[in-house]
Structure formats: structure tokens, C-alpha cells
Image (tube, rainbow, N blue to C red; front, top):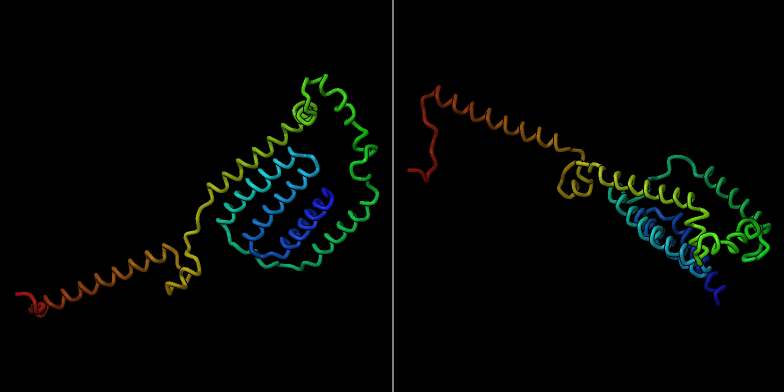
Amino acid sequence: MIALITMTLLTLLAAITVAIIVQRSMFGVVILAGVYSFLMATVMLLLDAPDVAMTEASVGAGVSTVLLLSALHLCKPREMAPVGSVAIPLMVSLIIGAALIYGTPGLSKFGAENAAIHQHVAPYYLENSLRDMGVKNVVTTVLASYRAFDTLGEVTVVFAAGIGVMMLLRGAPRDPTPREDETDSDGGSGDETDADLAEREDDAAAGTTATTAAADTSTSSTGTTPPQSSGSP
């Protein structure tokens, strides 16, 4: 039953990957990436790795999705059209995929006890973690003690990346140019900025002032008073 659920999840992951590739809406890509992370967290949970599942669900599907949506608010919602040909990237992807498929049969069977990864330092961790560290959870012992510098480096990288993203999102200036849809609805050209609008208003004010001055000059030279409105006494 577990194997059937795992294969179903892996099939869904493959389908979402294809959907992300053909998707042109950046919002759709972000949402599909979040769904992908949730499915991957479920797969990790089925493989008896709850710590990895929680990390994938919180960071991959939670924090990353929020940051990507925030960044998407500052740019265009659709992907730009490719400038060059996609033949070379497609060829590179196919070659790498074929190499991975070719090397997969040479790997050890999933969960095999005699796999090379289980014959290096894993036996020492399992036998001596309680004696060396006094902690029953082997995963905690490995992450916090045997691989403490590795964990410290990972935390530093994640912290630095988070600070960098916050600075970029906070310090990005907004484009004062109105969007095309807004200018089209208002009848504008879509190319005017605030400086152009201010200059046009100044020109209009200067023209009104010149017209008023010319009328006053004409009145003083003829000696007549301008006609008043019918409602004045």
C-alpha cells in the first residue's frame, strides 16, 4: 500500500514538473512549485524522514512561496518570450536526463543494508551516538554534533539568503510610469511620466496668464471697460 501511494505521488510530481515547464504565467509557476514542495514533503514522510518533510513543507512550500509571490508583485506577471533558440538548452537537458537514466541501474537497491552509503560512517553513528553524545535520537546527534559545522554552514546560508531577499523586496523602488491598461482606460498614451504631466500643466498655466495679460493691455489702450455679466448690478 505504501509503495502504491509513493508511486502515485511520484507520478504527480512528474506531471507538475511538466506543467511548470510549459507554464508561462509566473503566478501559476509559483503556485505549482508550492504544490510540488508539499507533495515532496509527503514523499519524505512516507520514507520515514519527518524532519526532512517538515523542513520541505515549511521552507519549500511556505517561506519560498511567500517570498516568490512578494517578488512577483514587483515584476511582470508573465514570462518574457525567449530571445534565442531553445534547441541548445533542450539538447543539454536531454543529454543529462539520458545520463541519469543510464546510471540508475548501477545504483544499489532502495533500502539495501549493503549499500555503499551504509558502509561508511553510518555504522559508527548508530553504535556510538548514545555513548558519545548522550542523545537517543541519532538524527539529532548527527546534525547537532557529528555534522555541526555542516549544519552551521547551512543555517548561515539560509539566514544570509533571507536577509538578502528582505533587503531586495524592501528597497526596490516602484515604477512611477502608469501601466498600459490604466492609461488605455483613461485615454492616455501610456508613455507620460509625472515630469511630463507637470510640464504640460505649467505650459497651460503660462498660456492662461499670457491671455489675461493681453486682454488687460487691450482694455487699457482703448479706454473701455470689459463687459460685466448680466447678473452683476
